Amino acid sequence: MKKALSSPTSIDQLMERADAMAGLTLAELAKRWQVQVPPDLRRDKGWVGQLMELQLGASAGNKAEPDFPEIDVELKTLPISYALAPLETTYVTVVPLTNIRALNWFDSVVYQKLKRVLWVPVQGEREIPVGDRIIGTPFLWQPSQQQLQMLRNDWEELMEMVALGNINSISAKFGDALHIRPKAANGRVLTDAIGEDGSPIKTLPRGFYLQKSFTQAILNQAFANDA
DNA sequence: CTGTGATCATAT
DNA sequence: ATATGATCACAG
Image (cartoon, rainbow, N blue to C red; front, side, top):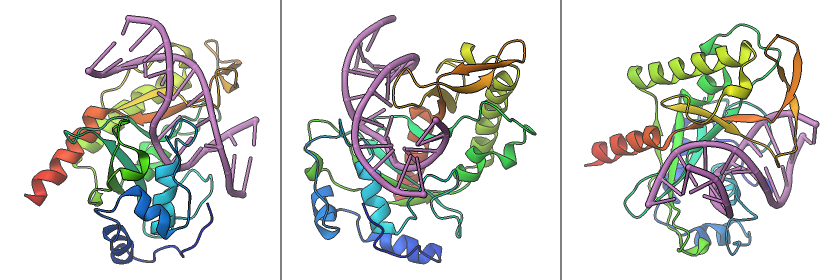
């Protein structure tokens, strides 16, 4: 998809563009940007997010930084059930497995991305045709002190394991708010990491994901604030 | 090849 | 039913 809009230069401008899509179906928004609606998301997993990028003027690209670096905002779509519960965990960024310098939370990409997020809830039930799914009301979120502490604790615990060569003993069961799971094109992809004895090894690339319980709490906050 | 956007699909 | 591990498309 092509970039058709300039990056928003202020929060107000971003929210204006965001509010303009609230209540629309994905088909309606897709028509506005002249993109085809896929029959399902099996082969287009990132389609919804990329449509949002068009609407909001996010700079495309694969940089490990927030979508709107000028205004320090990260964009996240959140697929939700009929009961307004998250249907999926939320991918944040890849886990650095090598060249780990200072284990500094505030320098981490996780912190840089999550310190301010524009959440866009979208109906995600698979039985709803993609084009018929309704876009919810986007809202801006900043983690509370408590949420920030949870994220930081998980991040520090997990990164310590990585730095000490224990990447292969990390599973999705670690971490309360944040966890680590594979993030690759397939199971044969290998990248460099630190082995148990400190020597280089090859392992599957991993990503940081937000647990559903964490994003559920974010939704609850936003919902309560509206009422 | 690595990062982005994520959801899929099967084991449990 | 759902969480974990696996996977898909595309940009740079």
